Length: 117
Image 1 (cartoon, rainbow, N blue to C red):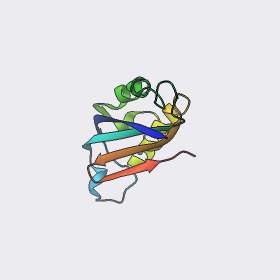
Image 2: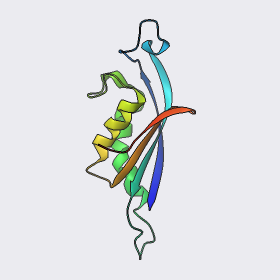
Image 3: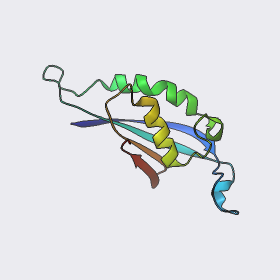
Image 4: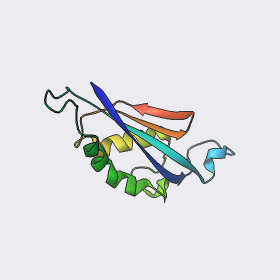
């Protein structure tokens, strides 16, 4: 079984490795949406894979690092594409949760999905 919890945060970034004149080279912001997906067996007693509150607790310090910050200034995010952000979030959570994927949306129609190494 797979479950997920969705989080939002606001942040700015610029992409340093795009071609000259590309609009994403300029500082700009997004209303990010992140889904943290975990998987496991449904517990016979509780009826769930895990408590959604445990996912929220694990993500809280990550959200604090990202929300209303310039992503380029966060260690490991010097080129903060949605792909790199998904990998970075995975690396922060992989020892805390039984992850199956991280979904990062930087706009309602654009994003990335990371399923681990």
